Image 1 (cartoon, rainbow, N blue to C red):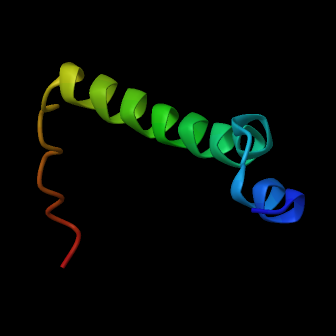
Image 2: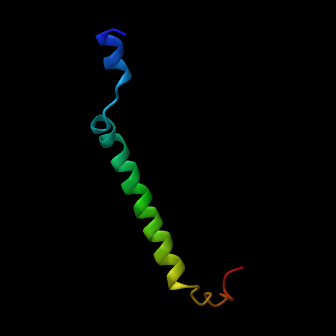
Length: 53
Protein backbone atom coordinates (compact mmCIF):
# COMPACT_ATOMS: atom_id res chain seq x y z
CA UNK A 1 0.00 0.00 0.00
CA UNK A 2 1.35 3.38 -0.93
CA UNK A 3 0.89 6.63 0.91
CA UNK A 4 -1.56 7.88 -1.71
CA UNK A 5 -3.80 4.82 -1.27
CA UNK A 6 -3.73 5.26 2.49
CA UNK A 7 -4.63 8.93 2.19
CA UNK A 8 -7.59 8.21 -0.07
CA UNK A 9 -8.79 5.42 2.20
CA UNK A 10 -9.04 7.62 5.29
CA UNK A 11 -11.96 9.94 5.67
CA UNK A 12 -11.79 11.99 8.86
CA UNK A 13 -15.12 12.67 10.46
CA UNK A 14 -14.23 16.34 10.78
CA UNK A 15 -14.61 16.77 7.02
CA UNK A 16 -18.03 15.09 7.03
CA UNK A 17 -19.49 17.03 9.97
CA UNK A 18 -20.22 20.28 8.06
CA UNK A 19 -22.38 18.32 5.62
CA UNK A 20 -24.40 16.39 8.21
CA UNK A 21 -24.97 19.02 10.91
CA UNK A 22 -27.45 21.10 8.84
CA UNK A 23 -29.37 17.93 8.00
CA UNK A 24 -29.63 16.98 11.67
CA UNK A 25 -30.77 20.51 12.54
CA UNK A 26 -33.53 20.45 9.90
CA UNK A 27 -34.69 17.01 11.04
CA UNK A 28 -34.68 18.14 14.69
CA UNK A 29 -36.80 21.19 13.87
CA UNK A 30 -39.30 19.06 11.97
CA UNK A 31 -39.49 16.55 14.84
CA UNK A 32 -40.06 19.32 17.39
CA UNK A 33 -42.81 20.93 15.28
CA UNK A 34 -44.58 17.60 14.80
CA UNK A 35 -44.19 16.70 18.49
CA UNK A 36 -45.62 20.04 19.63
CA UNK A 37 -48.49 19.78 17.17
CA UNK A 38 -49.33 16.28 18.39
CA UNK A 39 -49.24 17.34 22.05
CA UNK A 40 -51.56 20.25 21.40
CA UNK A 41 -54.29 17.82 20.33
CA UNK A 42 -57.14 18.30 17.95
CA UNK A 43 -58.67 21.73 17.91
CA UNK A 44 -62.41 22.15 17.62
CA UNK A 45 -63.42 21.98 13.98
CA UNK A 46 -64.45 25.31 12.50
CA UNK A 47 -68.20 25.86 12.29
CA UNK A 48 -69.83 25.28 8.94
CA UNK A 49 -70.12 28.42 6.87
CA UNK A 50 -73.66 28.56 5.50
CA UNK A 51 -72.66 31.27 3.01
CA UNK A 52 -69.99 29.16 1.33
CA UNK A 53 -71.48 27.02 -1.37
